[in-house]
Length: 200
Length: 200
DNA sequence: GTCTATAGTTAGATAGAC
DNA sequence: GTCTATCTAACTATAGAC
Figure: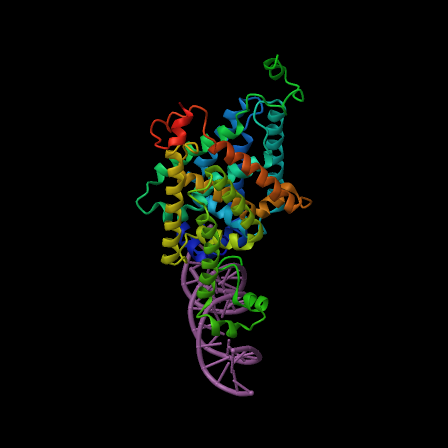
């Protein structure tokens, strides 16, 4: 699980307990094994994104997503690194269907977030960039784990670090998203009744 | 510039205009070329971190660092990806001196930030995690450029995206760092005279 | 279905002429 | 210092027995 070139069929064979030719009996080639893994990971990432509920309480919905994404990074750190490596290499081995799936799910989430903004339920932010920063700041704890190890030293407790990260990220995104007292952009542009009522 | 295994000596030879054996006349091997590149990039990253001035205006100092880091990601995107790839692979090819250098510079910056916090000049945050999120959220635009391309489509303007990112990140970190009106933690613990004066 | 043995390819490094 | 030609190791994939 170290990228397409990072693992050899010999290693995969050893880990899986099958022989090399036997693996190639089930898969057409190394490429197919790799893309199968990629698809699984993307599914995991996007399912959590899909769970953002347009009818939920906006800030809590987003904070829950952040929390879930961090948890996925903790549990599926190796998978996160495999995916990160693929993107780093230019996403050349990512099938077009997977790219479409990614694009569609992001578009949905962006629409939900922009809806909340226009209703004045969260502060005005660039929705795409909010998602980018949520992804990067959570996945960092998986993808750059070896750098964190270098900085915090070998004595640091992994679980503790993830707990601290959660506390930090909750504060970060709560402060960002909480609407300011007198938000000019959301009204009178906002059509939401409750929002309007607050200003009367 | 696609990681140690991502580029072959043949490609390096072609790009540099030299022949393969001629490159190995100057460098002992591929490993030495790679580590030379790594060291250059780390220097670039840590120099910008070093520029954080303990005597400057805290929030502006940090926001300037964020801006600089984003600019470095824009200009040195390939280098950022090379470094990210090394960390992703477990930082196994990073020399111990480079790791020490990284650790020391981070410790210095953390001390500066914690000083500002104890003086009540910025909100209370976990300094290490602040740095982690600044790195990840800025480097994302270099390291995950191909994913951004997938999401925003081929028609998106790279310069525009970086400009939008800067606006977003300035808001994000300004909101995080601005101390709240009645900050209990910073006073009376804070020994700073001006801070105390604000409360009289 | 599963294995051993091996073919075919690629890439890092070196020998040796100029 | 720089090149062509070549060696050697590692790796993907297949042939063919059981």
